[in-house]
Amino acid sequence: MKMYAENGGIPPVETILKAMGDRRPEFPLIADHVKKYGYVESTAAQTMAILEVMANKLTAYWTGQIQLEVALQEIQKECEALLR
Image 1 (cartoon, rainbow, N blue to C red):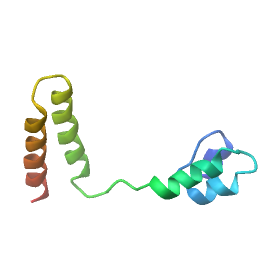
Image 2: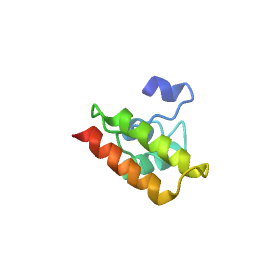
Image 3: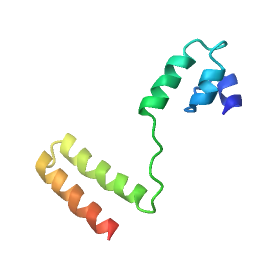
């Protein structure tokens, strides 16, 4: 990640962000946000399938194909089935 930061990237790693604050003055602020709000996406076997269900149902809602309550109920039902 240090090499990534040295070449213009913004790594999501607090220690590297703080260590490089002298060269990139925005990094300490970003480090604080990483510490407070950063998280690692679950790596459960069903994670991608759940995200796909959510994307499909929310897209259907956003495009006016189904009502919000219907989308949420279908998400709940399909995700519960995936987790059984």
